[in-house]
Image (cartoon, rainbow, N blue to C red; front, side, top):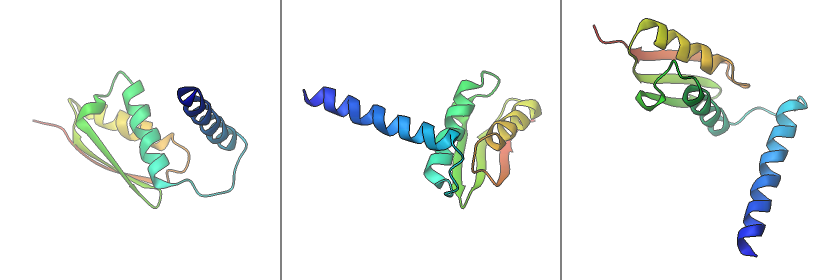
Length: 98
């Protein structure tokens, strides 16, 4: 019974976040939410190696750090981050080895 209640609570929370995300909430997006969404976007994009890219967010400004295999991967990571609701700016500090 407890597992059922935990699953139901998680589903309700996920649904509420999704509803607010699609219904134009005027509340500022929390930094932790942005960081989580950027990490998920990077992981879903097979042209970026999300394990090597670290994400931090402060006041809607995302900083990307780590190592990319190419300039194209570095640029793609920045584009992925900019797609997330609430991101005001991206500081791309990803290094590309010579």
